[in-house]
Image (cartoon, rainbow, N blue to C red; front, side):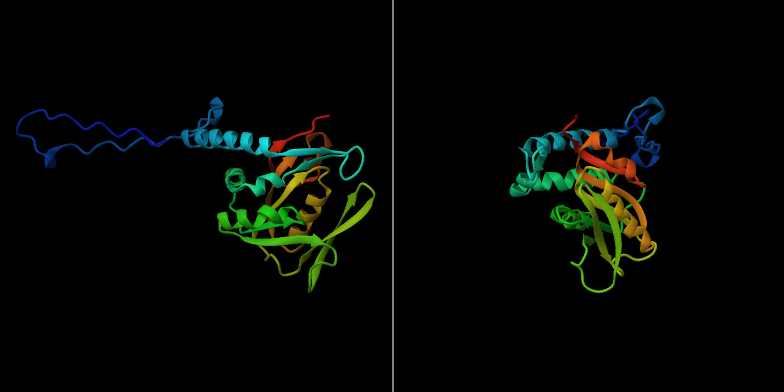
Length: 228
């Protein structure tokens, strides 16, 4: 919200000229008032925009029970990408989330495979590079490897050894955080390569699985779902 323009001073005599008018006072700059629990004007506008985007994105999700196996309620995010306006809304909402981080990322790391759907677009919007984390054996050249636990055993993620540089600031993104194991593995790869992990961003969080407890950097999610 722009500040109100300063009121022009009135002329006290008919002989005054513009050259003799006092300089206008500087326009007030909105500031945050965290101690009072209030957002600053720009933050309030961003929060309102983000809330509206979340409603649109949540309405686009579809759920399929017992897929891919009995007892699983599958969250289908693909309708968002089938609609150009919703796709744009998603990238804008993620951009607003990233603005909450203390530092702007140099690199966005997307997890195999649905992190690839929006990770490159978000990276482009942020002016950052994009790097994939893939399942073991899918990347050429020297790679770093990290393991994580799945429901029925262990799996492995890899990142090319020169994908991120020491000191770069990295944001990890994925579509859903469930148990948090795969995201934590990606974060460990970032740190193995000497980069700084500034946070995680997810489209959807299954809160009851408490996956964020495994993460050692700030985690932001657009939507929550499937409360037990």
